[in-house]
Length: 214
Ligand SMILES: [Zn+2]
Image (tube, rainbow, N blue to C red):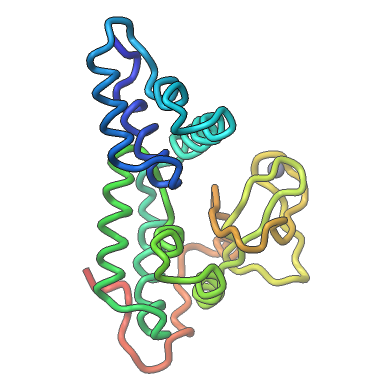
């Protein structure tokens, strides 16, 4: 028996999502796995078949580790993802249909233990550019910063360039990310959280509250 069926399933999904293998190749290797007398890891089968190389194998494992650790549902982050979707529509960057499509995709991935922010899903599907995502995050008063020490990425809420922000993990300084195109983040820091959870309702002139839509 395999130690963790879910991890195996996830491994295959990531390999496909990353474009390393096709659905057909995955199916073929799952069949091989089922038929083999000795338990074999899917990653090893894929490598033996020459569908992925060692570097890709390592990349998938790293990716899996990183995403599995993240919480699947943080209500605060979910709320901000909903707002993200509506701002994207408001800016005419995308359609409501695509927002729903990406939310469904996000939920599906979360069930597999993979956690993506909505912006990441949009970029992966080619519906938004990383520039547009940053634009939307800026509207949400969010800036992506990266720790100079441990490399953890943060969505920093309420950041202004004159403020020094420290990593909540290692205490080092946060700076603009080394790869400006990457929009994946590991955590959020709310600089405006000190005075309780009042919401800034300034950003959308006119239109009704985003929060009330379900
Ligand atoms: Zn750090």
